[in-house]
Amino acid sequence: NAGVTQTPKFRILKIGQSMTLQCTQDMNHNYMYWYRQDPGMGLKLIYYSVGAGITDKGEVPNGYNVSRSTTEDFPLRLELAAPSQTSVYFCASSRTGRGEKLFFGSGTQLSVL
Amino acid sequence: TQLLEQSPQFLSIQEGENLTVYCNSSSVFSSLQWYRQEPGEGPVLLVTVVTGGEVKKLKRLTFQFGDARKDSSLHITAAQPGDTGLYLCAAPRGYNKLIFGAGTRLAVHP
Image (cartoon, rainbow over the protein chains, first blue to last red):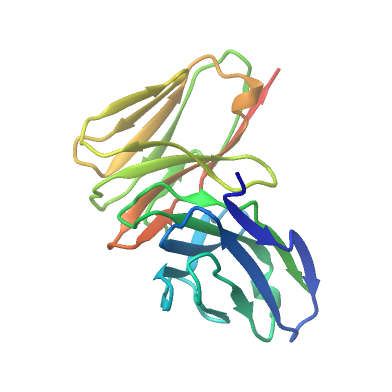
């Protein structure tokens, strides 16, 4: 049972570099989410998608981009990485919205130096 | 400003003690979820409460949703080291979004 898979687990970037965080789920869920978790701040929603081809901004979208070309995949793109993007990133999925259970990946720890 | 305020922020107790953590808001929610997160892992859902005044039990964990559906509590009886982790409450905002509190970090010492 793979569930939600995120890669890579760890990454160090230099300021100004770009990268893509990968997320894939095998549960045929329509809804997918990207959160970031900073120490003591809980989880903040970056972007979410309600189905292939449909994405929308969350609470903290600046500096990020997403796409959803398939039901399974929801990559998060960081352009021109900044130290403020140092965080742990979690991808999650759910069958529907409306507060249904979220299934999380194990996270990507990103440091921008 | 957090829409969901969790308290306390940190809690360090001895095995066998009881504890309660809180999740409060000025907003009314249709439901509220509690997740537990262990180091290096994503959060895992413990329970969802949907009715004002609802009480749910999960072994030694008791969850309560406030009558006005603005707050919730999690009570752990006879805490064990395996209960150690970050406890997060979450609630829907709009149709598609789930927002989280900052969490309560619990350490249970043998």
